[in-house]
Image (cartoon, rainbow, N blue to C red; front, top):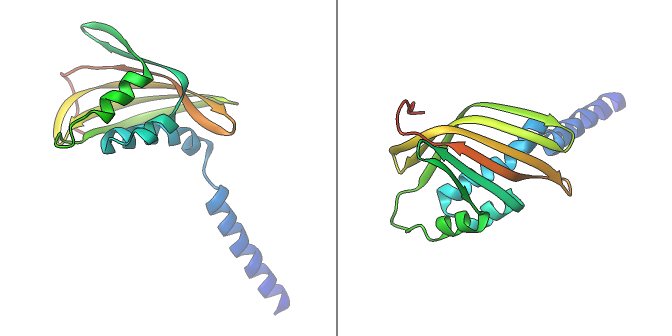
Length: 152
């Protein structure tokens, strides 16, 4: 009986620890990406600030050319979004994650909605580094198009 109780205690302890520490490296890398998407949807600038490293580079590529944005301007756009405006919803698919030590890359298709209306789609490319034990986005580049979008 004593060994049985001990084995149950060990099993429960392992289960609890795996829930606390059990996130895969890929899930850890996706945390700031998911924070960014949630921050845009909820117009929550604190989530955006947590997702980005200092001096993040943001570039948008469309058929009209390439536009560079500062994190400060991007966060201001989200902050100044009218509360009556429908939520910005970005849905990811076909996500690939590569990790080497404290460097990671996320490549993912996305569709962007304003409320329930499809606005545009493309590919997001995130570069991340691990700073003080946390993954941060150091660059974000995306392509943008209005045609050939799949309604995810």
